[in-house]
Length: 182
Image (cartoon, rainbow, N blue to C red; front, side, top):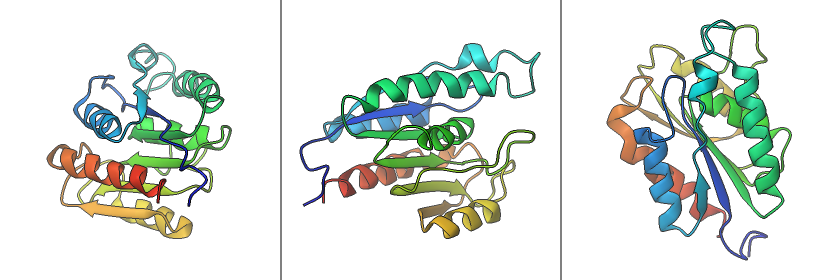
């Protein structure tokens, strides 16, 4: 029996750049979490993303600091899973290095972010879904990153937005959450 068998925990679901907390993918993950008894929250990063005076991706550091504050508080209450799409995946992975989490779910994660540190994450069960035809993040970069970590990786016939694989993303997320109780 796993050390997490006392019951589900909490998920923080982070949307991508120029998206929002009601975005299709994070909304699908929220439904998947609810079905398995996990609580969840979907932070709104749109104010940070709008700060184009700092970089073309907005205020990434402030976005990450906001997630860190939420995750620190949530981790004190019980098992925590971080999940995110694109920039949300990047900050989820980076925050996992600072807060105890039980798993990580990444959709179209950028492995490099210009002047920011390369993608890194805590050594926890990690699942990734990525498009073969991602026009922003080459699939090979994600494959190499996942291989080095022995992460579960699902490559799909899709682009960066993974719009044709919303249900597959939710199913992969559900599988990760279920695996924490086996």
